[in-house]
Image (cartoon, rainbow, N blue to C red):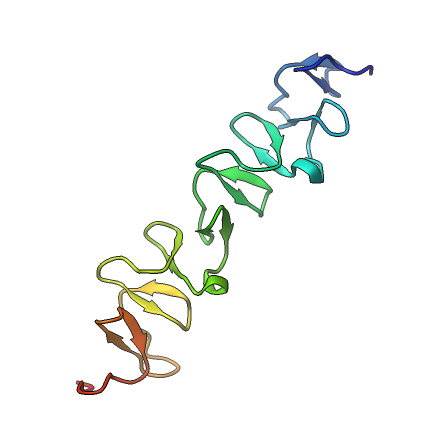
Length: 153
C-alpha cells in the first residue's frame, strides 16, 4: 500500500486510507513509522487514547496512564490508584496512602480514616495483626504504641 495523505491512516484490513481507524478489531492511528492503523502503539507514542483511537506520547488532560493495557483512562480501576499521572498498584513508593473512596494516592486520608503505614492505605480501623495498632487522632495515623499521656483501653 502506498503512503496515505496527511490526516489519514493506512488501514491494513480494508487497504484504504481512513480518517478514523476501525473499531473491529480495535486499531489506533499512528504516525510512526508511517501513518497507519496499528494494534500496538510504537515506543515513541506508546499510550492508547481510547476516546480518539490514536497513539499518544502523553495521555490527554484528565486521563491517566494505565500500564496494564497501555491505555489512557479517566479513572484508575481497582486495584490501581492514581499516583501523579499514572495508575499504580501501590502508593508506598511516595509515602502516600491509597484512598479506596477516590482511587487516588493521598498524603492526608479523608475524615474518619487513618494512615496505615504497614499497608500504605487509608483505613477506618487500625490493624490488630501482626502487632496491635492504635488510632492516633492528632496525626490521623495508626501507631504501635499510644502517645505519652494516653492509655490503651
